[in-house]
Length: 144
Image 1 (cartoon, rainbow, N blue to C red):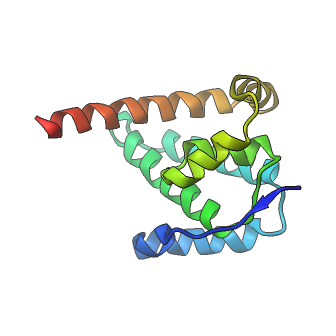
Image 2: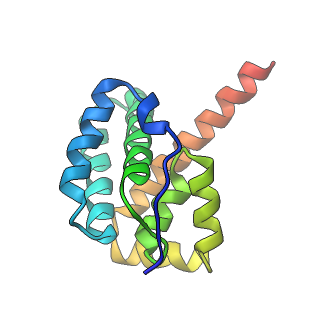
Image 3: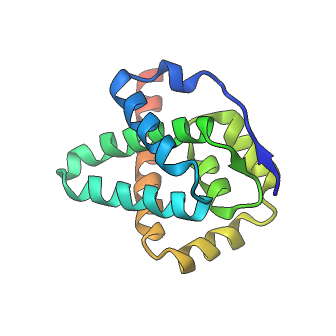
């Protein structure tokens, strides 16, 4: 197993309430595998978004991405796990995204594997695409 451990200071920059969530989840997730972590995280996002209005869903996705990125920074990353690599590709930390890209042989095949293994991943992908599109739109608007 190829394991990567590094810190970029992202966790320390987060608000205290998010650090508390990450601390609790880190203790819970440390003995688990990346498939278990992945399923728990995508289930968490599904539950969170089901409980809010459509307009607030992107804020939920933003917080979820911060939690995922904080967890990736604090837990050993398995560079052979498609679940870990996929979370890394979607996290907010560019070095993790680059590392995941280097370690992912065939991203489309990896995505198909995850969609078949975790049917709820499709809904999460849609939320992430919606979030990324809105973030890009906001960036274009603030540049003008």
